[in-house]
Length: 306
Image (tube, rainbow, N blue to C red; front, side, top):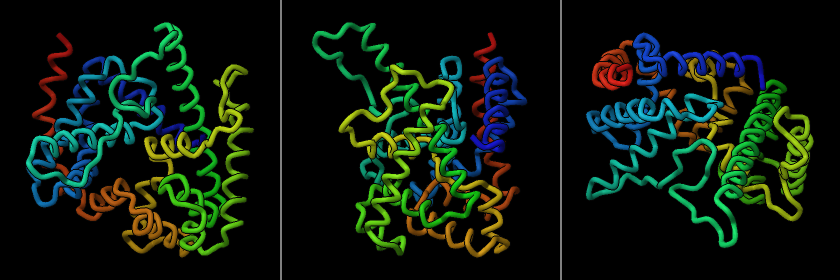
């Protein structure tokens, strides 16, 4: 994990702990920090219905507060909030006669399947619980090492490999299609994918939480689904706000400008597009909405302190 991401994660964990203790100032910081980008994302899904977008954001923060006492370790607070928001938007779509092109996704950061899964015949509940816990560890390990690997590609400005992997795992494309879009050959795409999987396997064994009982990529297992799930739910290829800000101002290196445009226009990352919308709207546009969301949500936090 890079130093920048590690520091941000520590700050997020501290903020969540303070909110868990009922600190209103910390909750206000959270609301002020994320309202603009969350509302921009909701507005992209709901169109011009700004009131509905704000309602969805308010319910997102309420969802966080409702679960604050039993949150799993969060690798990315932003990813968790966007996951809640997506589920709230799906609820909105189900309440209305017209859908918004939304599909159900899981709320949990460590479980890719929504709802409940029946315990297999002959399997005890305790055994099943251990398997769920082991899978959660596996996903956490993968998120850490995959995030670090993608961070290194960015630092090295190896945007060809980054594009290839993003097309394969984040977009779910086949090798030929990914090669055409990335401007390379299909054998290169195949080799890049295989080398990446092998590096992840080696890196996993060096992770502090890895042990001999943790089967990362089993014999004959296609790792594509697991890598894709972990990639998407943790927003691993999403860009820093500072990078998006520099792109918006045109103050960015040509290689980075090309990759940011690829991420926004080819990958069509709606999370980064929402962040960019929020940045372009300016700080002043986000504050009234943030104040309204805080005022309508803080009562729930006060109720928790009793």
